[in-house]
Image (cartoon, rainbow, N blue to C red):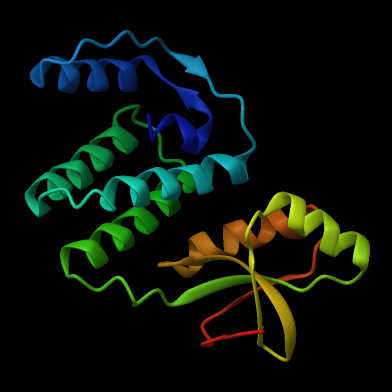
Length: 177
């Protein structure tokens, strides 16, 4: 479930909503309220990855619009307003909006790491398989990801800073190294 990856908790209200939708779709589902074992960064990036994988299947746009509505309901189903959920929802809406408008190339924000040592370069390589190295923002760097909202990009950047990396968010176009 995408929602469980945002705040790390699946509430009884969220279980009820997902169960109702599954029943409407004739899908058998057994789900219980639970905690999710993953770091905040992993949860946030997993949301994007799951959605992007789904959109690569080229689902009908009407189905994607329904998914967006469902995600909005899911985020608000527990009656709590979590900043991470709102930030994630804004990012998801940006991804969906690009898909619906056939505008996948317009991703304005990039999170960049600038390794400060060989040890950091090694750690980054193990964290980010296949990461793109580039020139831009005044030197060489590694792109963590491209994001639709500044707030979401800032959240991801803060997580990497907390791990001890020099990290920035930019809206510059970058060239491959």
